[in-house]
Image 1 (tube, helix red, strand yellow):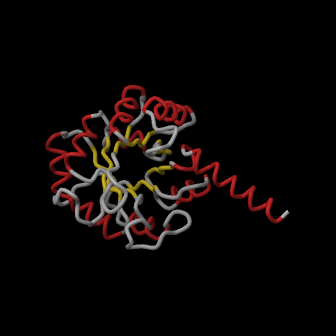
Image 2: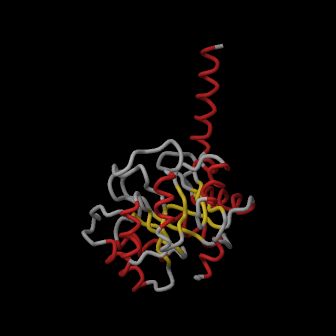
Image 3: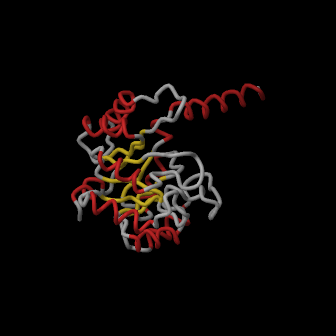
Length: 230
């Protein structure tokens, strides 16, 4: 097995991402958060944005999954071949991209995108962020190296579950085709452990570890709700 994947096997990958307008949207800040996650036991980091990825690559000694987000709707996770090439150039060992069957902005198929990326960067691995079993099957055929459950519940093909979509996790793991990273609404350690019990290769957690705005909102809503009924 690829040595990058061997380092990720059976571990926790932490997604360190900030969004436009947020106070933490700064490469130095996100790199510090990534370093803190590694100190806590993360075996890999998933990061967003070219500047963040370059900073993380220079500072981290664990595998880096890189992506960019362009827009907010449709195919927006590393959506084009040009985007993939830019992410790979940051030094990220794995490029994460939209692995669904939806039309891509540059008109290329997923297979052509993966092929073009690997032609330019033969050592780079591709993580296909999928939304369903059919997406995963298509991503395998297209030449992906890793399957993620990242987009389950976000493409309109499946309902959005409160936590991980265990049905789609089970379906993709059952393919026994590629390593499966369970990602998406993993909010509690028990859910991460359940993902491993169901056959995940590794688990990716973001919001519940690295997004204080959301975490604060969870607690603020709980406190406000309790105060209103006290």
